[in-house]
Length: 91
Image (cartoon, rainbow, N blue to C red):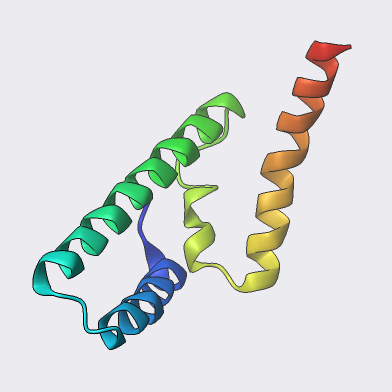
């Protein structure tokens, strides 16, 4: 999944706040590493969801490049069938 503008913008705003706290270079590298690990976990989850829903690769992961409304619609379209499956399995 490409990180896209939204993730990049979020990272930049969070990084700016952290840097304003005058973090040491070592602490700043730890924050960068944490964010990279977080994005890796998000990418893994998106790939798993695309496989589970049997949809083409990139349909969900492209959400980071979409306008907010379309991103919300896509998120709902992914979550709703997965929740229905979980509810059905527990009934």
